[in-house]
Length: 167
Image 1 (tube, one colour):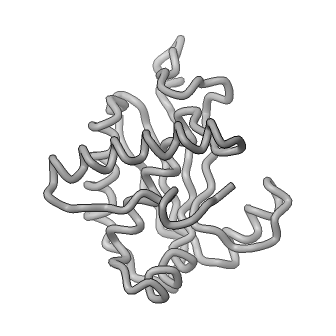
Image 2: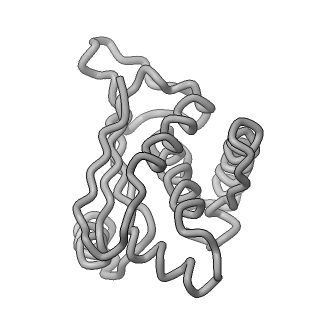
């Protein structure tokens, strides 16, 4: 099982090998190595179309998640019945949107992209941020993941929930 990484944009250069390795590290931290995961990098136009279609928000964004399992409770792993159900879903990374944020904040693009991917994976695992309680729970989970990422790689990442309130 693994990560399927697609880069469907040409606006921002992506270090695909690094992103794949970082997402694999996130999967290890979360104990989800047996699950497949799709990561799709898109430009502002594509992420805006997807955001408009599925969330009725006609603006670009940093990440959109489409879970394979709709009823996963935060902190619980899905229980697939068959081998072909070992799939968490897909995350779409708005890399052009993330790059613009990084330029405005003078932050590292690839480190931020990994933090955004962690946020998207949390959504695939049932975490939400519609209420204050959900926001706190997701923020704590992201902080744990990124502290473990630092412990394993020596690279410090900022949780997306600190960068912006995505509610």
